[in-house]
Amino acid sequence: MSPATLAAAFPAFLMPDPERTNLPAHTPAMQDTADAGASDEESVRLMLLVRDGDTRAFERLVELHQGAVIGTVYRMLNNLDDAHDIAQQVFIRVWRSAPRYEVTAKFTTWLYTITRNLVFNETRRRSRRREVSIEQENEDDPPKHFADHSIPGADENLAKAEFHDALDKAIAALPEKQRLAVILRGRQDLPYEEICTILKMSLPAVKSLLFRARNDLRKNLARFLGEEDAV
Image 1 (cartoon, rainbow, N blue to C red):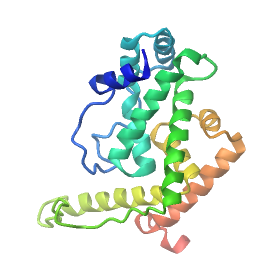
Image 2 (image 1 turned 30 degrees about the horizontal axis):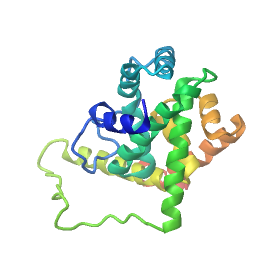
Image 3 (image 1 turned 45 degrees about the vertical axis):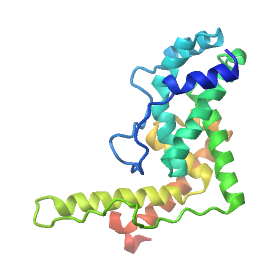
Image 4 (image 1 turned 90 degrees about the vertical axis):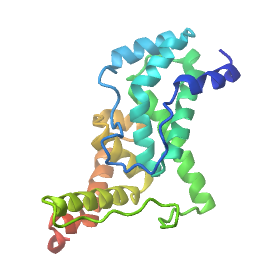
């Protein structure tokens, strides 16, 4: 299948066409991990079929992994539209790389390495252009909802929402490698060894990276964790 034919076919099955709103990273609707049926053996089997030009196998591969890829990119870039765009580029690269695919590592390692490259390219492009995302409220923003303290549990729900919002911002403020390591370990539950391969770092370096990231997160979230005096 040529790139032009692939591009024409992608909208039909690559991504669902959800309403693109500013979806919070902690909302249950955001799929954090690959589909439960996406065992590595199954993904490799499908990828070998894709290598032979099987478009149905490619469609199934996308279905299994697109949620995890979109979720990971969203947490790196904090923009759902960009997450969909980058995820589509990830799977285009998967297709174009298929003829050269060899089973040398776990499929998810290979997939997240592609994702890492595209995400880091995007964050560096933003840095070069010095584009800073500033949250502003304007007439197009959805109305803010304030807690009704007369409703049982309202204060607790508000506290949880504030914590998740603070956590998202704290993760977004981490350097890109720390941020990706935290997401891959905490959200995708990848083993350290796989993260090492994706980030091209040694095991001690990854553990050190995560240690620094967790320390920074604890400092930024101290008021929620009751650790103000310890920081």
